[in-house]
Image 1: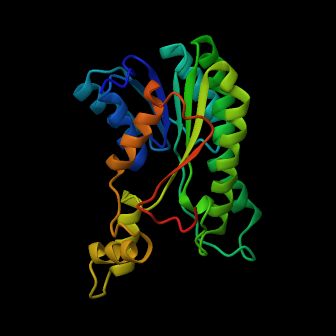
Image 2: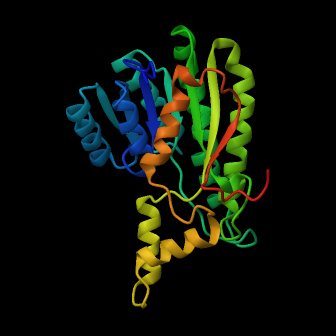
Length: 263
């Protein structure tokens, strides 16, 4: 199926590893030019170069901490300088938390608010004007099943991901008249390097392997009884970016192997 994405420009935050990198590669395979940003400048530049060499698309790797407004301003300026704007924005940068509400500091709450909510707000403000000039666009916010079904050990993550989901709905209503489609994806268990790192830490010095730990997590939470690969999730992102998903507007989609316990 031709997804009609060739020669569009996509911006992906957290684009050097895990889900963001898988989405980048999936879009590049469809002929999409890419702007990847991440905190590790050396790694994001190398991944951008590798994708350009493999897929023959134009790429730009930009070092940016999206919790900082000034880094976002610089990112938007680089996008305008190199590509004249963008057609697709994937707000993907994020990470889990681990705390109790009674113990967590204001600074930790603010960091996650900036990372999961304000980064998307600021990037949307910066890139929507270009999308209007281009006749439309797509914004996808990568939230989490925890926005709907919280895990008890990460309340800050749960709260900020829920806010990200509501932000998606409100922004969608605001910009659909400009032919800009906004949607949200709530993944479940996706086997990213973070999951593997945590599993190795938890099983070090025990009789259980990290693979066995992840399988136990999957058995507990997901009726499908396994983690998804980042590439499996990326396929859905790529579809939602395409005109083939032209009637998908203002929705939240769960890609969770059946984990969500409500309808």
